[in-house]
Image (cartoon, rainbow, N blue to C red; front, side, top):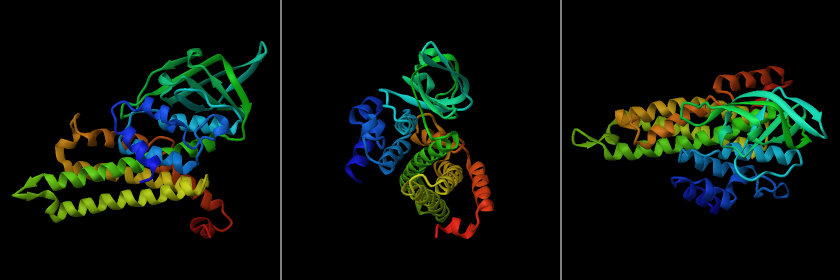
Length: 317
């Protein structure tokens, strides 16, 4: 691994990594320096996200990165601390020399922890202080915050036109979750291989049994296929077809990877203390967020149906 990957891995392996992530600039990796970010490209952001998935880190990293990129796209500077981006129907009104926003947004990641809400709607990107929002707490299967946010004439701290629309933000979010899924699947594989080498049955490690070897091989295959698709999408720099294929692959593989890992571990992997539980809860949660495999397969099908040359679209030739 390179320096960035090593640094991210070391920090995210800790128990409470957010402060160290901020101090090292990793919460804004891939966000342009002129917008107040750490610079770098999408591959740098992906490296940090992959490490967060591998360690099942309970931090709003993807959310802050997505919000930071959105602000940069609008020509606005990033705000300090945790950020999360929301999109949907927004009513923007000029009042008293400023802009106020109204709207309701559901299942917003980490809204209760955010210092800034980055709102996309009506061709604008705006920054809102969460103190001016009603936040009703919720959670995903993994226990991560997924809150309802209600804005009622909330004042915007900053606002600017932006060409990014809700569909593009969804694609970016889907790719971020796909990267995290590949990190989590890599960890599920590592844990399963190690356990199969340690757990003995009938006087030998269970990893010596052909049935277990076949399961581990399938798990490795699922993780690898998903990782290849995701890395290709990251390298494609925003290609909507590549992003859709990446999330469809990663979400589909996540379910099977979690199933196999728990088969290998038996009841042990479901206990509160075992790291596999934290990994698979995130696999089950993240596979659904920003669209599951069925939703993205539908998008791919629609793109193929509309393409003048579907073969060219599939092969990229």
